[in-house]
Length: 439
Ligand code: NAD
Image (cartoon, rainbow, N blue to C red; front, side, top):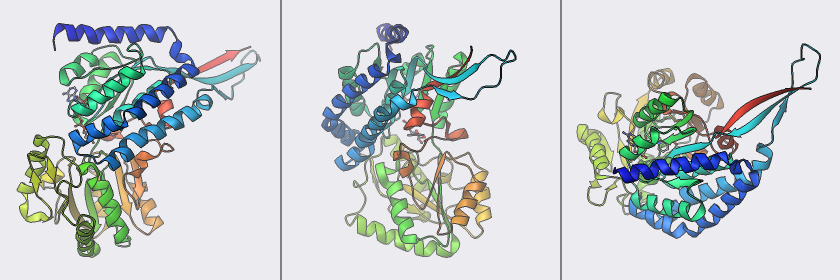
């Protein structure tokens, strides 16, 4: 990065610090007006966003609208609808004052100040703009750094931000590690990072240097348990949806299957039949693109390490960055594919005879972002939830919890810290300040 770009980044940061001090963002009407304007500009860029998503990630128009555009709009409308209520101070009970004087206790929701939002590549619109609107509804200013791995989308995000806001309020900085390292050295008031656990550690170390509060939205290997009493047809369809969407590059995608030995063969038979019916021309090029050739090579490496375990799919095209929906059977924890988050359309299948063994293996590993269990028994589902942990969980379903603004979304331990969406976004981006007043 040259001196000029560095000065420019520092300049934007200072402008935002100065703007925040004017207190204009404290006004709820100001926030609503800005976000309504953003809504119009964002909607006007739907075509540009969809085209960029197609170029960078091979997302179909339908998928782009559903998992990127509509999620941002529905979140935004919900925030706008409820902000007046949420922003009100909460009156709480008071302990008596020693003098007997009247005491009033309340919690006020304070904006942090200048926020830094770092976006990932996989849902580059939703995962950059959902945190942004959360930060703004809570009265903050923000600098956003979109992922450098989806450059066409990053450019449209910048256009939208430039057309919607003054730079002293919201700005986009394009770049990669160098820019991120500089930004992380600045005294932001809040950092919101979405990405891998490894980079999460770098971000958290940088935040620790200045004791900057932060949210980490990370990833990991999300287990999917299929018990012998599960409705296998539903399980196949719902796992299939969560796994192949965005070519497996979804932070909460089912990473692997843990299935009861007694139903495994039937499950695989049904899974293959389902894939053949849903994708009669095969899955290559039908489920999106892998973000880079390097990642294709990484995924191919999992298959090359155990070729005899590939029972469906397995083909890829380095040039077009397409990869088939792939099933692997008889997988064990020592296989290469089980050593890190897959982040691609490979679904390893492992079995258990005793659910206790499966839960122990899951619990011996880093805390996942999501855990899915398929069973017709409420008792078993409750037991699994009671004896495991994960950021969030679903019973007889996968990944759709992320789209609900009624549920807080986020990880635990190595899969992240902090929760957002809906009211939880407002809370995440606000400092709850206790105020005690004596009459
Ligand atoms: P990533 O960690 O590689 O990159 C995220 C951001 O960090 C990018 O903006 C990038 O420029 C920056 N970055 C990368 N290397 C850096 C370094 N050494 N120093 C400073 N900054 C650096 O993540 P990704 O590949 O874009 O996304 C995939 C990961 O993100 C997966 O692990 C996935 O599970 C996770 N993810 C989590 C969520 C969630 O909401 N919890 C959502 C999507 C993705």
